[in-house]
Amino acid sequence: EKDAGDFTESTFEAYGLGGASFIINVLSDNANRCTADVKSTVNKNGGKMAESGSVMFMYDLKGKVEVPTVIDEEELMMAAIDADVDDMELTEGEEEGTSIVYTDPKETGAMFEAIKAMGLEEGSKMSLSHVTKAPVECTEEDFEKNMAI
Image (cartoon, rainbow, N blue to C red; front, side, top):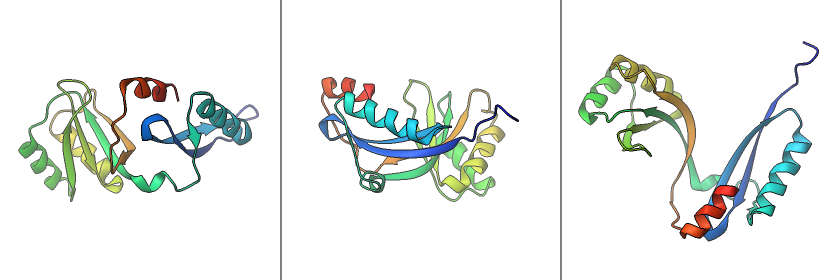
């Protein structure tokens, strides 16, 4: 199509206030404008751009399945085994009464199928996520400022 643009994904790394680190994934049809916009936003909000690889090593890429209900761990484990998922981690979701299941990125689809087999497909979401290896505590004020980045 004549009006369709070529979109590319870019990844940026940055540091915020209080020792927080960021991985910023962007999809854009203009790499130069995208780079300028990300750098401007990070700098304007008190952050600092980081060299490639200086933040990424502090994170693991994991498959993430968000489920809008609390899941029984044993039932989930049985469903995961049936779906040939080797490794998974069940945690409480960010909102009360929800669950998050982390797994190997290659097994995310199989884990989502296991969730569906449990009858929990409605409202469930699947994605890839960078999960920190070393969480950082920062003040409430720094947190609010970091959220602007």
